[in-house]
Length: 255
Ligand code: IPE
Ligand code: IPE
Ligand code: MG
Image 1 (cartoon, helix red, strand yellow):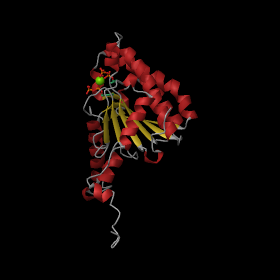
Image 2 (cartoon, helix red, strand yellow):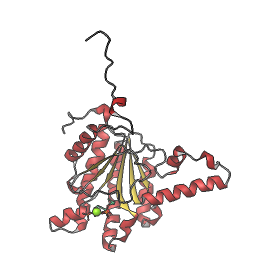
Image 3 (cartoon, helix red, strand yellow):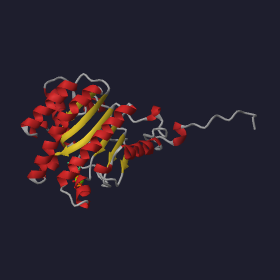
């Protein structure tokens, strides 16, 4: 692994990934879409392991959107099975590497055995401090905003806070991502230029990285390229370059 090009002091704190292109990967090889999802799991392992080794504290993985429930039944079923097995197989590794697993999304829609396995994995890893992997499952950015509004409306109704108390901080805290910092880098594989209802509120100044590489082909090398591209970006947050990197003051009489 060549990490020499990366500045370890300027790594993102939070990387979010829209893992897309499993179906196309499979179609290109005359395989079933499900085979594509199966291969995609190795890419999940690769990005989790490299993030852990680099010390990136938060990694969000968009694994299943609420809209993905509309896919053919057998594909949804296969995805749920793969997820369940992934959680079972990876749990000991998460314990060894100090990885905490969090799941966001409408978990109640998951098949009961998957939900049980997921809750077990979350409970077992909840005290791990090395890194947090956020799995977005049956997640919808808009649903997340709806539940945030409902939760704040309830607080106002119950007199816990006043309308004037509502600010960005409160909204962020009421999102499912609660205490997690906003992503610094959002990667989408397979070249699609859209968010597909992933994080909406959470990405006001997130750097976007879209690669044509299909998810099953996105491994360590491609991840390192994304991180290296991130480090070449100038994050201005609305300011000017001059404000962020003031030129050294010219000393009078030195010319
Ligand atoms: C991403 O790959 C996996 C999920 C959305 C669950 P796709 O299955 O969307 O692959 P394409 O976009 O059809 O290639
Ligand atoms: C986005 O991929 C969702 C996940 C990667 C889980 P999709 O394949 O569902 O996105 P669209 O339909 O192309 O926008
Ligand atoms: Mg897709």
